[in-house]
Each structure stands twice: as structure tokens, then as C-alpha cells.
Length: 80
Image 1: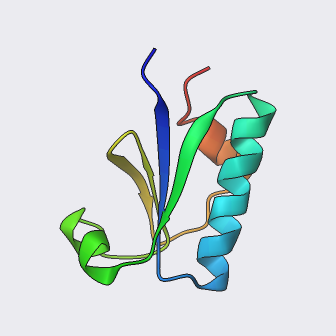
Image 2: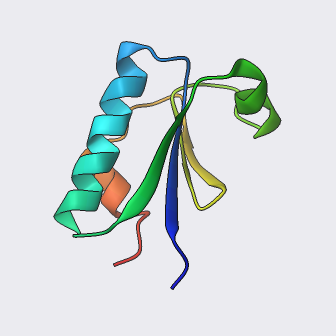
């Protein structure tokens, strides 16, 4: 199986950090190993098609924009 890549896209605000914490908790609950990146560069965020932050991208697919998903919501997007 290919490596799981989880990207948090946002400028580093409190909501972005909460989304990252929730994503890490979801990975831990499923006992998954993933590369977790926090992308803060506005140009890189815009290039990915994200218009509202925070955003969550899993394996290059944007699954959420403009909201802080809770751990259970993130689990639904992860392989298990």
C-alpha cells in the first residue's frame, strides 16, 4: 500500500492547528502511519484549489475546506 499523506492547508491559525490535532488523533485511533504536512504558503494553498481554510487533503484529494472536522469525521475519509 502506498504511503498515506495527510495535508493540513492553512496559514497557521488556531483552527488550522485544531484540524491538525484532530487528524493526528484520527490516525492514532486507526493505528495508521502517515506523513502529515502543514502547508502554510498561501500560493501553495491556492494552487491546490483551496479557497477556504483550514482545509484537509488526503493523498492529494481535498476532502474538506473552511471547517474544522472532528476526529470521527476525519476517520470517515481515512482507509480502514
